[in-house]
Amino acid sequence: MNDGKKLTASQREPVKTFGGHEEEISSIATFPDGKKIATGSLEKTIRIWRVEDGREMRKWVMKKSVTAIAILRDGMQAISAVGDMGDLSDEEDFDETVY
Image (cartoon, rainbow, N blue to C red; front, side, top):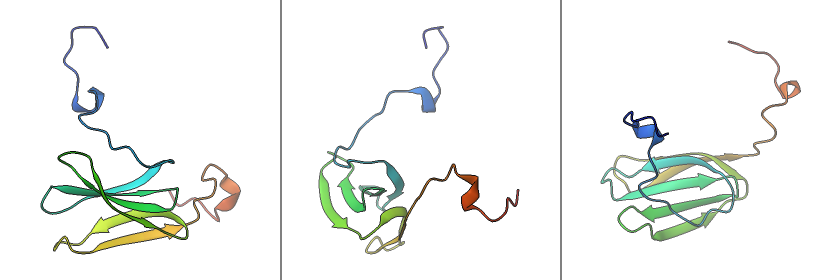
């Protein structure tokens, strides 16, 4: 965008990227101290990253795709949801549209 207008935060270049996941990241959570993040991926992994330098600190391999992740307030435990994502664009997979 080169029209002289100031870019919004969502239009700026990434400040930092974390390499490692081979498929889409489906969820991300920040630790309470702000020094680490956790990411979950469709490739069935959960990874913990150090924000300062992007280093992968830990990796777990799950049996199914990671669909959600949360970090508890104490920063000592992560909770994840896993499952088969399927093709969410196929309306035949749903019983009813609520809204």
